[in-house]
Amino acid sequence: MNRKLRFSKEHQWASEETNGEVFVGISNYAQESLGDIVFVDVPEIGASFNQGDRLGTIESVKTASDFYAPVTGHVVDVNKELIEAPESINERPHEVWIVKLSVGAEEELRALMDSDAYEKFVDES
Image (cartoon, rainbow, N blue to C red; front, side, top):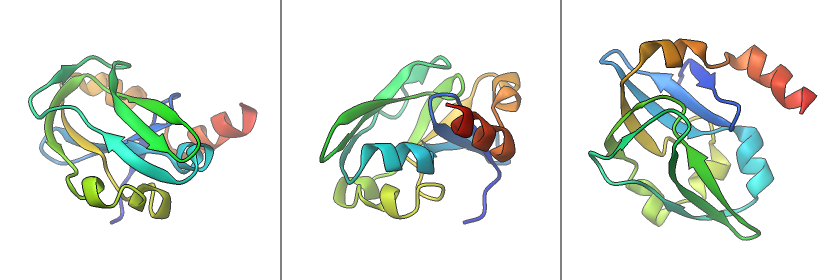
C-alpha cells in the first residue's frame, strides 16, 4: 500500500482517503521504541475524539503506550486483523493501520508534518 503519510509529534501517522476519512497508525520510530508488539487496544466504532485524545493502548513485551488521535474525528472502522496479528505493526508500521477516522477538521490534517519534516523532528528529538 502506497500512502501519503502525515505525522503527529506523538508519532502517529494519518493517511487521507478520498472520502474525508483517514487511516491512522504509528510510525516506524514508535514501533522501534516499543519493541515487539503483543496487543493493541482499539476504541469502539462510532466513538468521537478530539485531536490529541487517547485512542487506545499498544502493548509490547517491554512496555505499554497510549496512542493518540492525530486529527479530530470519529471512528468508522478498526483493524480487526490486529487481534490475531498485532506484530504486523512491527513488520510494516507505515502500512498497517489501527483505526480509520472520519475527519472533523481538515485543517488539522494539513497541519501535520510531512515525511521530511517528521524525519527532521525525530532526528532532533
